[in-house]
Image 1 (cartoon, rainbow, N blue to C red):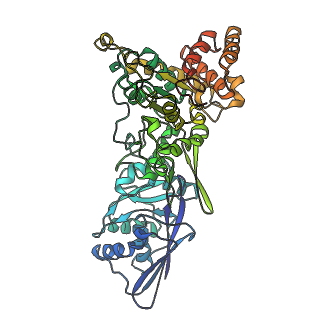
Image 2: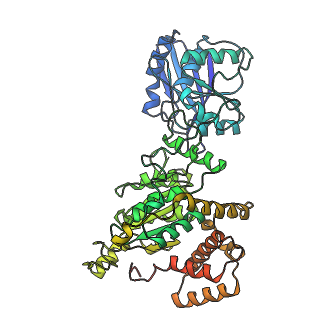
Image 3: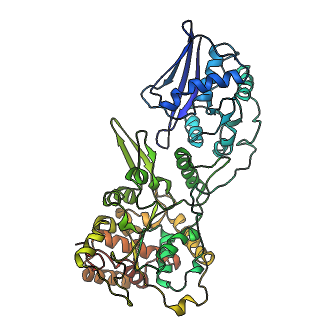
Length: 523
């Protein structure tokens, strides 16, 4: 007898429906799995065999062929255990009844028949709904995640026996009520991204002095601008970068859904977790590989740039990273998407993140410091910044040089808290949400070149100041656009519709360092 069960394979963020077909025929006992299975899928036959027996069912002593279609997609992981087991029970007439409605089944089985959690459940539910599947059997630990979509009916399954009983109800023409938490009755649990460093680690009140740096971070947070902080060690670069999430607005429902999907597909969503509500914060080590940061693998997986989607990607001590890795960031920084190409196919992962880079101004760290002497030659400084490269630097809107603060400032009272700064950021974000409600982008930092003039109108004095600065500083077209985008954000923080001269002058200060400046000496 032939049986067919619907399952799912994560391909990129979207994924692909997989049809698990089971055929049992007379012959020497054995199980064959076809359809490009990886080792974990091939091993499913042994797990399923023992799980079926330990759950009180009979494992057929016949020839069993299991086909995973479409055959051209490589299948990986243990999420096919439960659908294979259900398919075998149907094909061996241990599970009988009418043909049930389309049901997607996901889950790994352990040897006693219990169902273990799998990754990519929320994407599986969304993909299934788009293909007409309305019922889903998922591991009970993934139930909150699957129910976050708020459509269809998601059932939490804890064992093969429970899946058998529930499937039998469907096979007899009944649609049961969800036995546990469902999208119709449940309260979703929110969680932060699965990252070892908590988002918003500390408060900006902890940073003494550094008013220009804190202002730059506020502008970056409000407009989703990329930012570079450079200066001697001990000046607060990393400290301020780790506090950026504390002033960022929460994710919208749409943003939360896509961020949760990415983390789920990557396997970083904790059990019993619903939608991620806080913005991701990723800080890879400087020894990270290109595949780890950009994404890739035999079966492409999202990298750090995608895990930071709608959040922050921190490259601490950026010149320490591999040059080829830094240069590969240009596409995701510019386009907000990264393409992983393989023979015969390519997969796109969303990667619209806010890049934060920190660096010393030179290899020894003393360049620009008033109480120390830089021992680096111009050639060494050139090589140091050459790793970052002019192309990537030109895409960084805000550049902030910092100096260590004096002892008097260190022992002074705390400054503005993150809570106060976040209120101003929230106001500017609300202005942008209203302005861009009919646009595909939502933040000033993402304004495309063709819309700069329309979205960034200047008053007369502002136009004159920008024209003089363009002549004096020899700003490139991209640099000019960056100044206007920064000024637009400063204007929003001031709650003014037109960009004024004061906004342009401040924006120029935040964009000043770079290109042909001595700090980088890259031209």
